[in-house]
Length: 356
Ligand code: PMP
Image (tube, rainbow, N blue to C red; front, side):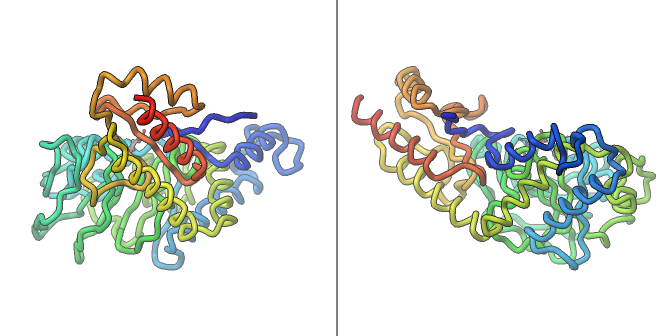
């Protein structure tokens, strides 16, 4: 099968071997004669899947035995915008406004308490990551977004918040690079980029930051309850959790986060060097803040758009259109995308330059 080179921003490419195993499990899960979709979520077989997925997530982040719990929840990363505030915002929280998703997180948090936007790059359409801001005392937490999927910026360093809990939305770059994950007190990520299909959201939380707000938290919003019930308070999104487990196993077989980071670095260096070299294109973001996951770029002459679109579409590339708030192009290069796909894109860009 001639699969397209899939640069889609999310849902996005996952490893083919994961798709194969997952599709088989829909018919016959591990030789049981039953589908993964028809067994009880309380069955031993599924409880093992959930436990494996949770422990692999902690293992890949190097957070085992450090007071963290991994949870699979529903409602997407967008639900975490409000859940984090519900569980942790008593008086005042600090937010970095680095894109549409941060702005959405701010909007939700404002329903629960005072929100201080410590820095924002909104004025320049979020094309850089603000630095050199000060962090006031007395914050309940500081919230940031490690990778801004729409704009193609990525935080390379994170604020030193001392005793103040640091929360990070890692929806679009979790498991893509080695960083000290223990600097965060809560990490969340929708599954549908580097982990699995849409439907599950991973939350990794340091237990000792919980239980400090005075408000009553409804069961479905309560991290402590989900920890107590081992992510099984209600029926979890079984298929999404199962495929996430398969993807995390795939990551282990391929050398884990350190090995995948090398590949991701090579892919992003390849595309950015072509964007900088090619006279027809320009990068959208500040160079220092370029994302390894989502490379955003535009044509200097917009009138060439129909010609370039025709070329990349006929080269079997998929999902290269930029988000409407940036325009141009976005090459999303998540963990499962091979360097060969990026080579094809770069060849198309080179060929386009020659023919114009
Ligand atoms: N945060 C980031 C960084 C995202 O990229 C996205 C979605 N692409 C979201 C949050 C929202 O995620 P969801 O659709 O799972 O609610």
